[in-house]
View (tube, helix red, strand yellow):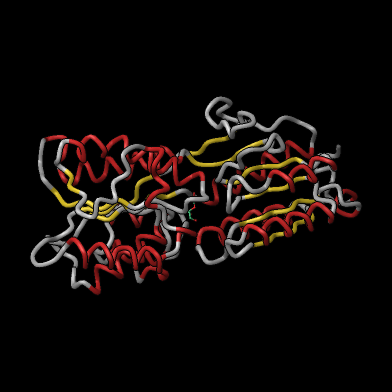
Length: 349
Ligand code: GAL
């Protein structure tokens, strides 16, 4: 196997450094950043890169990966739409010794995934749960408060990690009555998260769900005090629903969590319409995957940090796990703008 540096001129010419990148969708801001950043880094290292987006359609993702395999991809970097649907196509990948890196989300139910690069997604949920706990003073016995939990797309393995992290913090307060879920949409345990999942992480579906909960369970002077939103695309739908129900920023406005630091949500945080988001710096993740590919092309074992946690049902996938960060109104400047994650003008600053 040639190293990436050595492969610069001959390798890409004879296709040695050939990487297929498969992202879920362009409709969610972060995946555009993820795909384009990694593509740029690899192409600057003279790799041949095929970057594909699958419009959140699993069949489209499978055929795009098949094309990348047919195109001679040595390494496949895949953020699965449905964690359990890629077994057969990865069997094909293995037939040509392609190395498979699961990107951000764990590919499940197959031996044919070699590595995972992601953030600590359980910790993402924990940070959201602890934020609500602290803001409401739950540990000091405050309450009762009206609280509505949301969970992510039922086909996304990460959604289970997010919910488990948050529910480990919040369920005790639901059980002792400090948090009241008027809608009844309160999973009995971590493993029941998909029962209230929002398919495709779709903002419009989250908005419709919140409209329904508000109109059915929050009439008259009843107000919701806190909402667990696992990511920003759901939060933006929930905010729109609150808006049409005449909630406006101020003391009566609920706590709303988020994830991904999408521009629209950072603006909402600055406008007092969202309380926090969890930053998972896509540049860090892209850079880590770039380093993993360099090692793989050089015939070396990529560095990993966790060889125990990520059991995909067929094997424990060795993983490199990065650390997520809480961002509130007070640290948008330092954590997002000064770090270059977003431009001030994108959020009206
Ligand atoms: C998750 C990902 C989150 C969020 C969500 C919707 O898998 O980890 O960061 O982006 O998908 O795309």
